[in-house]
Amino acid sequence: MAAAKLNEPARAEGPHIPVLLDRILAEIAPVSGDWLDGTFGAGGYARGLLDRGAASVIGVDRDPLALEMAEAWRAQYGDRLKLVAGEFGALDDHARSVGYDALDGVVLDLGVSSMQLDLAERGFSFMRDGPLDMRMSQAGMSAEDLVNEAPEAHLADILYHYGEERAARRIARAIVAARKGARITTTAALAKIVEGCLPRPKPNQSHPATRSFQALRIAVNDELGQLVKGLLAAERILREGGILAVVTFHSLEDRVVKRFMQLRSDTGGGGSRHAPERARQTPSFLQNTRKAIAPSPEEAAQNPRARSAKLRLAVRGGEAAPAPLDFSALGLPPLEVT
Image: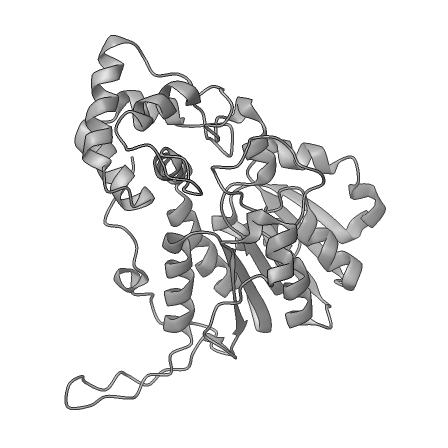
C-alpha cells in the first residue's frame, strides 16, 4: 500500500508501483513459506511474494475497496492467496482465522495508499475537492466529525503531535472560528482555512495543508495505535526465523518501528558508571543491521512517491514469551484520540 506525497496531484499516474518491493524480495531471498501482507492495498507486495515463491500469502486490509478490486485478479493464485477484511493490528488473529498458527513473514507498508489518495470521494487529498472523510475502513469517526466537534485544544494537539505542525494552535483557532459559521464538510474548505494561517510556500515546498491533513488522517485511523498493535501481533505469530519487514513514510511511524526493533533485539547487559546494567534477556528479534534501507536513486526517480520511504527488517528469534514492551520507549506522541 504505497504511501504518496500529499502535495502531489490527486490522480492516478499509471499503474500502482509498490515501494521498495524489489529490495524486500532481494533481502529475503529465496522467498518461501507462508506470509501475511497486513496492508494489502492494490496487492503489489502479495503478488510479488507469490510470484517469487511464497507458498501462500494472507492479504489483510480494512478498506473494503482494496479487497473488492482484488477480485479481478486473485483467481490466478488460487488457494495460495487468502483475503481477510480487518485491521493489521490484529494480524495474528486474522492469520489464525484462515488456518495459520505461525507465519514465515509479515510485511507492512504503512501510510495512506495511492489508490485512496487518487479518489477525491475518499477525502484524503486536498488537491481535489471531496467530502472530508479520510476513513480507511469507510466506517467510524470521519475527519469531518473530528474537525467540527473536537475541542480547540484537542485539535491543536492533534495537529502538533501527529503533523508536527508548528502553527497548530493558530490553525485550530481558525478551524473553530470557521465552523461557528458553517460546518466544514469538504477537503477544499479545510485546505483553504489552513492556507489562510500560513505563509505562501516557496518553490519546491509542500502545500501548506500537508501536515494538517497528515495529522487528521493519523488521528481518524488510529495509525500509530494500529502500528504498535501490529508489531506486537507480528511478534506473536512469526515462527523462529520469520521475517518482519516494515516500510514507513514519515518520521513518526519510522521512529516507532526503529525503537520497537531496537528494544526487541536488545540482549541487555552493558552498564557503566553513568548507567546501570540492563537485565539480561533473550531477544525476540534479531537485526543484521539497524540502519534503515532507502530507495535507490533509480527507484526514487521512477517513482517519486518512494522518496521518503524507509525499510526496516528484523528476524524472529527463539524467545517464545518476550518481556512486556515498554511503550514509553517507543517515542509515541503523548496524545490519545477518542
